[in-house]
Image (cartoon, rainbow, N blue to C red):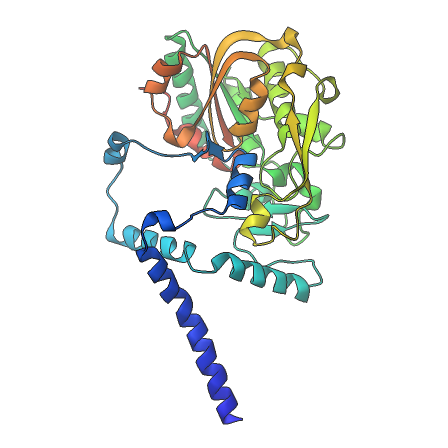
Length: 372
């Protein structure tokens, strides 16, 4: 008995120590021998619009990086630890094993994941606290103060005035988190303190106190979600049908025109898609249950067409939203807000700028990124 326990302990220690040792060896290999994303993961990110032109967004040029505040020793240590753990050998397989185990032990009603929350009807939600706070938004526990909303209003008004001096129209969009639209599929264990989320709170404030165009298409999404699925079950993003609903709410607000979903065409590209949420949970092979719809731009109503150049500055939701816009504008360019440079206004010469952020990022509307 003692020998058996001893060998079990030795095997366990070897297993625990081998993973970081193999990771260290892999990190010492030339960078071209390391693949940060598998082909499957790359395809997922490209499909949901997380990648821009085949490259991950958010890159900064040398000037921008030099302007960033210096990192403290603690910050550098924390970043190094995070990078090391993110690159652990076999990390994805271990995550998948842990997730499958907790799902099995709970009869498929719960999975253990730091980023993915399993809801009802095989719908998954984003529960990260490192990429916004979508669960706090859902619970209604992170409302803005009056001072914060006033600062956002002032920045958006100043941005509109600045761009108007360049003969550029300026509009803002805030896309509701998936948790807000599909609240009925959220676990009962997560209670809502206030059903008015932070994004809706900000939209109400701006509508009541300013003449800014701030499109928060919650009502349009709620009115259409029984007609078609608007967000992927396995992904944090809306699909292209949801993106169409969002942009039609923008057209209704800004131009006074509107088209229903059944007036345009969406082709089906796949019926076995598994999105970013199940990828993070290591469950891509088990939950490949989503249908991929692609908007056929030629089916757009030409009565809604604008002979203008649109620059869409946003986040990963902008991938699909800008694709929808290509059916309605002369030219469309999409840039990630994190990597936006003021010189892009000179490069693209836009007639219209849409600044979009997902609800979990809406505090960044305080940042004057579009003003030189």
